Image 1 (tube, helix red, strand yellow):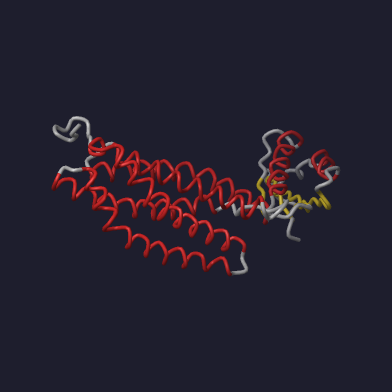
Image 2 (cartoon, helix red, strand yellow; image 1 turned 120 degrees about the vertical axis):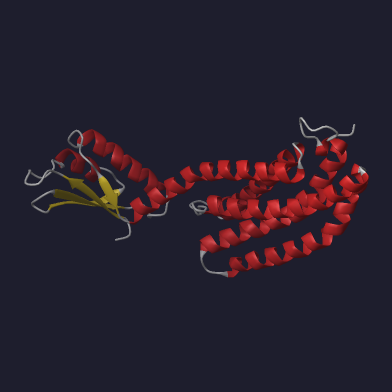
Length: 279
């Protein structure tokens, strides 16, 4: 049964089975529950089998798991340990772990990327601009993903819970790669002549074609996943392909050169470095 959850209730060896009467009665009264069964091995473990009606990978199933643990804390004996197993419990733990880890990954990626760009380009604004543009690309991608696979798909459509973590790391890495490729050309020309406008034009002229070709190849490659039958592959392929197209056109070919042109010599300003900016 797909919605079956096993609640393991360990107790001291030789002690009586855990008193689950009130807990079981509350579960049976829940319309989301179809069957509740209690078993004991006669030694040190009581097991409750709870058959839930929601699909294991749905938001309703995750809410049900949280409600079960809340009920267990109130209706089981004080201090009773509750261990959940089954498809719904595994998916709920996986979702919580992925979403909880997303913020740690975000912090590590942002800090490491900022430090790397600061060291390579010896500029304070270049890392800030790069991270802002990359986050803009990621947010736009998630927005399109939600519209296409959740809003337009109708009620009950969900985005795979692992996609935010996976897509963020892939998209951020690709975006940073294009950023370094473009800005490195601009920086080389600027250091030779000191003309920021000419440097931006030079970098754009010499990187537009390689970035466009590379982005087209990557977009087609990941877009091929949309022709598979698995919804999570379709969502992942669409998200990465859309992010690459947005980054290689709007972000890298329009916004980044425009910002660098407007900022002028401030692009290369680094506090404490003499001559790092020419106003």
